[in-house]
Image (cartoon, rainbow over all chains, first blue to last red; front, side, top):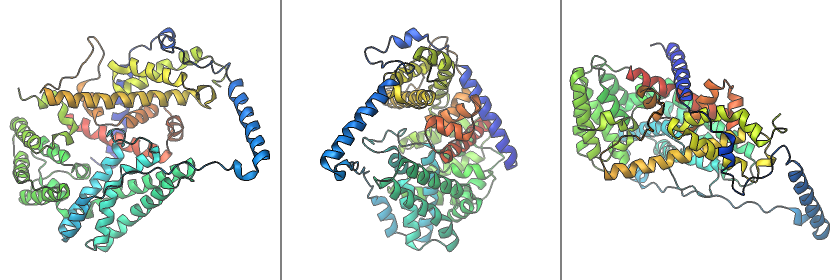
Length: 335
Length: 160
């Protein structure tokens, strides 16, 4: 489907989905049901309550003015809020990975971090249930991007990337550093923070949307080749699900799936990048790769069995939770 | 324009939209609880009488209540999955539900993405108005919208 048509169709589909969701809403409860929950905590109605903040503002102004006159100008200087800090991952994974920084590994991890970047933007830190007590929302938002940014920065510093790839990543890293500085600065205003975050968001979109960037990363790692190799003739649900489970579904957006003889080798290469990223040897990854590739040749009737086989394998590897679509009971329930 | 309204009048004006908003975020079964939680939290807040845009404040409060509900649901499901192999969702008898394909397509969206598509497609707000309503940047709205559309398109095309 041409890109513009697909965009239009996505737009129409989203409108229809929204309509269905909104239409399922039950009737709103009557006001009495809401008011009954107030207990003693309800402040006066807004329509009658505007004297209250004005009066408070007047009192505060008097107190501040009095303090200013009594103690001198320096006492009116507000205490800066405490600097919020996030735990910075030392990322032993990145360190160990850099020790083994052959070009293919660096590229594989760059691909992985690109995917993670795309995913970070979709899943906010609060949805991931991180403990962010006392952390500003802006800092929390940035934290969700930290891991992929660290890897991208390490990849650039490793010297193993070609000039074009470095050039495509650098504006994103610069935007992140700038946003990180502004957000960490306790004297910056909310507007400055949002502006810096927006700029990083736009740079992130630009990076992820640029076909040359994605192609460059995926062509080098073999992930794109693997996905392109994985066959339109079977339209394998299992392939898509396994790749999604492994965090490689970003490429599915851009690449059609076609058969190719080298699918097994390229997919295994991609999966070995995943193994390196997770810093744990997983011999079963190769088996999973073979199962995934086998799925491309399956007839539609056999796909469910292959998907189930891959699901069990993912469950054994502790990776099942990476693919939310598999929570569908119809797919999950072995019975 | 809403400053002259009592809380009850404001509720009467917004409640239908708010419960649809809640249903978009958490589904119809939890919509009423989440909507009432959000409204009560907003109207009992000490800042309530001084907020500039009470409608936006109500929407954000309902969104926060929805996010809390989704997070606690996630934890509950994790616990259940540890103790049993059943993954069935609890659906109230007789509660209207979107078709399974729609439910599956929405399952992968974050609460904020759901909020953005509701305000864009149901309330027909432009990006700036959505940003103001949710208290986020226009760039973030654009990003959430783009990713939500892409995700829904991909999921539904695969399902069809």
